[in-house]
Image (cartoon, rainbow, N blue to C red; front, top):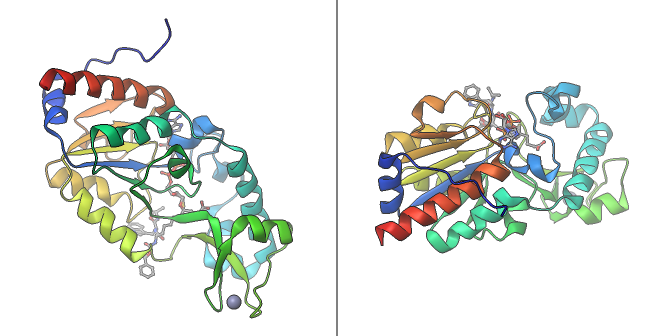
Length: 257
Ligand code: BJW
Ligand code: ZN
């Protein structure tokens, strides 16, 4: 019979999970790796092939809007063809275990939403929409890419349309960051999955949760700067580790009654 491997939770972690009510999942590009999407850093990452400051900054867009647009149009097509993987689907099922769960993602690919996660904060925006640099009007990326696949399109007002993502040096959406900070600060369980935890202020959420007493679990084949704060580290791909963790959580909650 195939199915998740049986993961044995250390006793202290099992106890903390059994008591957990407020849960935050913090995700990064590694969670979408098994959906066929590239990560940013590391072997095979998007930025092995190009420098971030050439593409993911407002200055880069100012310098060469068409080049930046083409990169995002290409990524948008990939995302549109991708499907949520077992990690996204398992996190969505956690809503049955933890009704107030919040998924805080750095990903711009909408895969948590498509998997069914309802309380979702997209800290770095979304590829699904574009907005006008001049008047701020938003519209779907699909429409903008269809109308102009190879060069940055313009709004009726004459302004350039740009992807609705957060570039380096730009502020994160205020309400999203506030909600993430507030929930991290009162989480009982905080699961950091598939992120290198190197981009701020997002990465700071892990320490906020740990300082507030949350049980921190890290899911990542590689260690990160925050591995030392983790009560449990699952060094495996998220598509395997998250379903295993889900089964273990279900067992320990069933035992706790
Ligand atoms: C797997 C796996 C599998 C692989 N399963 N895992 C403090 C100190 C120093 C610098 C700063 C600081 N505070 C702010 C800064 C500056 C900067 C920053 O953090 N720089 C650092 C790089 C040092 N931050 C900013 O500029 C932010 N803005 C800001 O601070 O504004 C201030 C301000 C205030 C008021 C007014 C104006 C300004 C903005 C950051 C925006 C980040 N944007 C990007 C691009 C988004 C658009 C796009 O998609 O193109 O967001 S950068 C990129 O990195 C993307 C990601 O969301 C983000 C995080 O990456 P993530 O998700 O962790 O991916 P990877 O690739 O790094 O890691 C993947 C991991 O998965 C690896 O660990 C693998 O091992 C693992 N993995 N397969 C599980 N199957
Ligand atoms: Zn406009």
